[in-house]
Amino acid sequence: MTVNLYNLKKEKVGQMALPENIFGLKWNPDLVQQVLNAQLANKRAPWAHAKDRSEVSGGGRKPWRQKGTGRARHGSIRSPIWIGGGKAHGPNKERNYSQKVNKKMSRLALFSVLSEKLRSQGLSVVKDFEIQPLKTKAVFSALKAFLNLAKNSKKLDCLMVPDPENKTLSRFSRNLVKTKVLSPDSLNVYDLLNYQHILIDERAVEIIARHYRLRK
Image (cartoon, rainbow, N blue to C red; front, side):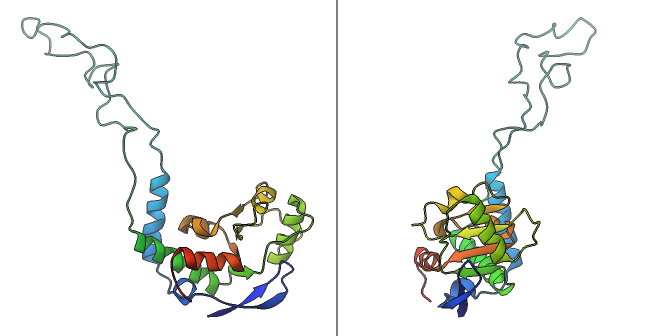
């Protein structure tokens, strides 16, 4: 499949053939949702924690003898039914929320999102990200013009995938609102869905195909 190639002035400078098995797949919402849920679950950190009866202090000896007092029998003052006792079935920081997704499913979900973004015109291939002078303000102005945003817009909502040789783009765009730079081999479903606009360098497309060992 062939798409137009643009510079950052949104001028057409040529065409480029994209791998059909990456950018030409059908939209698979069920698979994408499964992989996205797994990715978010793997990032989850279980902070909530309540001490159970083995973790609270005290309660080493039996509070009173088993028989003869007329009171209910108890073995520890740190039982969950005592004030100051351990929590029964409370949240535990050792809980593991991670979910496993095999490599084939992850790749198909990634390719499905890339294909859908291209179909919905949310993905553009650019010749390069050469911006002069290379300053944050210049990067913002160039992207704002390319995306045809409103004059008073402060948020770009843009994900850029440059050539790995471009070491400076990330540094000069890190302060821009809702803007992120990813290397071609770090693409993931969450970031692709989280941004409305995706700009990919033409050399990055070749690296993506090489990374996944795919042919055009």
